[in-house]
Length: 140
Image 1 (tube, rainbow, N blue to C red):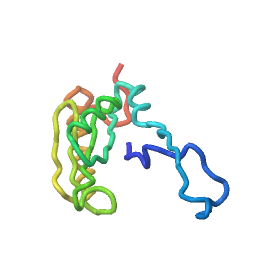
Image 2 (image 1 turned 90 degrees about the vertical axis):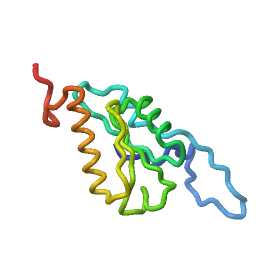
Image 3 (image 1 turned 180 degrees about the vertical axis):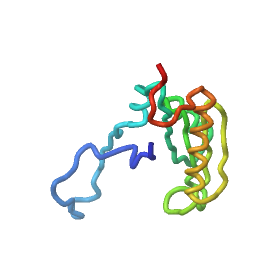
């Protein structure tokens, strides 16, 4: 799963331009649909669900709580308040969390981060005895 575009969305959308003369508008927000949580709650046994979290504080605690709450097998978290990490950069530094442990990926190119995430998926699947090729069903 990719990181959410937004956690909140406007309750209503205006069809006409909001005029400056009317003053600063109030924008009421509501939560967006939590796709990761929905998939995590109905995840097939043979599936490995990977989620992502952009954090700015208490990265390990918040990411671990999110992994468990959303039903993800692996959660890739980054502290987007750190220079060179996350959005608008060609580099990233992440912490990959799973029931099998934590893996820190120091600041590197995003392709290297992707390799580390795939390695973590393979390790986690091997740890729980799901070392079948991706997209194949469990043997009967």
